Length: 183
Ligand code: NI
Image (tube, rainbow, N blue to C red; front, side, top):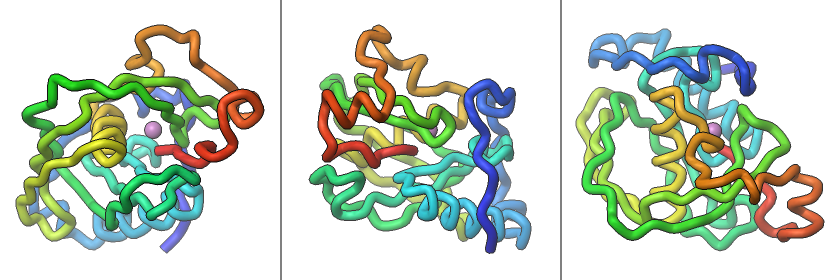
């Protein structure tokens, strides 16, 4: 396993729509190693999610994991999930505004409105179909990461840019407790 270099805002790979994986390719040693490396990279960088384009692979593949106290916020933990060929269904009408950061946009935080709950249909790392409902912070991370698969970044989702804040000012003027969430 190894740590992967994270693509930053401006790298064209972050703006490309990814391609889907067939089950055979998903099960291949190369993709299984990529998944392991993505998990390592996410954990090493204290991220709660990481999508393949962020490590320069234009594939419909993401990992996410929320520890009990992600970034100091009181979010229910989400065990490690590896999702490929992700489809989001039944987005709730109810929206929630909260802060987001992104490993590909280091040092910035902004408020983004997301569906409060969403249904997810995807393949797990073995190629098995999985469906589940995500709510709250889990739903937010899923939406943020799935956006990456379409070349969309959280900045594009901000209703306006007035909340955009550097991390240092975020810690100073917003709260220290929430500074760790990045995906
Ligand atoms: Ni991100």
